[in-house]
Image (tube, rainbow, N blue to C red; front, side):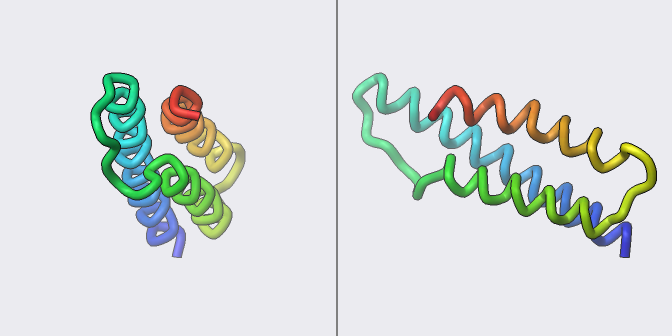
Amino acid sequence: HQVIALARFGRDLGWAYQLADDACDAAEDAAAGRAASGCAPARQARFLLGRASRRLDQAALPGHGAAALLDCGHAVVGSMLDDVT
């Protein structure tokens, strides 16, 4: 159960990162006057980051393990999303 929850967390976080990167690219394209592509990648990334957090709750990690993993995810993906908001 714990391994499955952690694998799902990793998958959601990976997709959130990719979508946040797509959102950054779309913001750069818009600033350069190019047409935007994709379907709300920043919104999708935020959704996946939230779902990743819920996956960690399901993993029931001991100590501060879940908080540390979530902090890392928010530090990377969240900071990318801050740049496109």
